Amino acid sequence: MAKTFSKDDVASHSKTDSLWVVIDEDVYDLTKFQDEHPGGKKILQRVAGKDASKQFWKYHNEGILKKFQGRLQVGSLNTKKVIAQPAPAPAKEAAPKPPKPAPKTTAPPKEESEPQEPFGDLIPFADPSWYQGYHSPYFNETHAALRAEVRQWVESEIEPYVTEWDEAKQVPDRIYKQMGERGYLAGLLGGKFPVNLTPHRVQAVPPEQWDLFHEMLVTDEISRVGSGGFVWNLIGGFGIGGPPLLRHGKKALVERIMPGILAGDKRICLAITEPDAGSDVANLTCEAKLSEDGKHYIVNGEKKWITNGVWADYFTTAVRTGKPGMNGISVLLIERESGGVSTRRMDCQGVWSSGTTYITFEDVKVPVENLIGKENQGFKVIMTNFNHERVGIIIQSLRFARVCYEESMKYAHKRRTFGKKLIDHPVIRMKLAHMARQIEASYNWMENVIYQCQCMEETEAMLKLGGAIAGLKAQATTTFEFCAREASQIFGGLSYSRGGQGGKIERLYRDVRAYAIPGGSEEIMLDLSMRQSLRVHQMFGMKL
Ligand code: HEM
Image: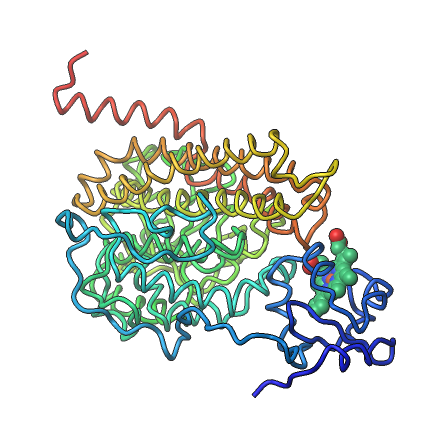
């Protein structure tokens, strides 16, 4: 049982050589910590032996206590009531049991779309409305169980450390490994759960019930940490490099490569962009020439801005095997251990821990068995991948926009200026309202798009949804950018310096560009949304 102390016990530790404080009825020994306290030791000495809850919450956010509690807490006040804990979010070992077979999520009959139990902090618009007891046709109890499972993992093992990892520009390998062991990597490939390629399973959801809304939830919940670098470290390469191999690779290649990746032991990335070819994929120049014996391609060329490239074992690479233009492109799986692959980390404005990379291929010998799809028909492989990539960017951007909103809402309730809380200033409420309306409108569009993806076969989705997804990508990234800016105005100087209370906002503000540009820049997305939708609707018999 945890130790308990009276207020007098705590008061007797009011000197620098024994400095205790109370925060929320828990007792902390800060004697050794005072010298390393970023806010200084004097400020701690002024509250030594006292209840410092009010002062603490003025300067810190929740992550700090989670991070330091284990090290600094020595007990609680004897007056502290033991509050019945809400049903604990499950630890890995005790992850929620697979629920009974759930109704098919795509079109539940009306009486089965009962709302799920409220979940999270219940701040309006800080989470999707189905988290807050509102009805939804898309989510059932398997989604709720998965949400609890991922959130518990993220809050205990990830969130307190994300700032450190971002500054260090890397994430410990064990987190990616856990993504594999928890079955999340296998669930993020944009389709059915690949039971034949991995023994790992998601504890909260039986594989046969896995759907695109589960996939969305994993990405959405890990994005709550408010770091594009972190999310991309885990899934930035995998989520776009893996699906082409899975869908278009030869069976033997898939079975040789995929299990190691899905276990979290190996990493894959997507290498398309070049120093001179970005959104205009048809112009890429990295060449692959068939060897005289016809057994290998010899690859030479450069790739730039490749997420996860520095750590990747495999590169799903677009190469030129034929004539200029889109009909001369193929996709190859290049293995680092073949030799001739050099990677160097690029210094970028944002997404620091994602490992943005410059790659050179010099006479790399790639077996012809590693061709993904057909020779000179790689453009189709790349195009079918774009919807999945863009939906990933949309999910993350919209959660990051929510993080900006949520952090601002919380801060606006504690920071006082001109005699009142920020939330009591109409100008601040106006900012929050403009954030919320854009987030909700975009998120509801996203749910609809994901539902359409779920109902359509891949090629049909590529054609029919390409335009909408492109438009929604632009909508999501402009919403994210708007929210990052407004949150920054609300936080003021705290979002200009790194770390601390405004740390997430400062980081997301830098990460925004990494969402607005890659995967198709906003300008190209908006134009494509019109061209593609018009083309498709012409086929439907559109009348103008
Ligand atoms: C368990 C006890 C405490 C821990 C672990 C802790 C930890 C930290 C950390 C890590 C920071 C860096 C900024 C951040 O990441 O938020 C910080 C800043 C700060 N802390 Fe504490 N602190 C504690 C108690 C207190 C108390 C009791 C006070 C006030 C009486 C205080 C006042 C401050 C101030 C003024 C800053 C600077 C804030 C800024 O840069 O705007 N801290 N603290």
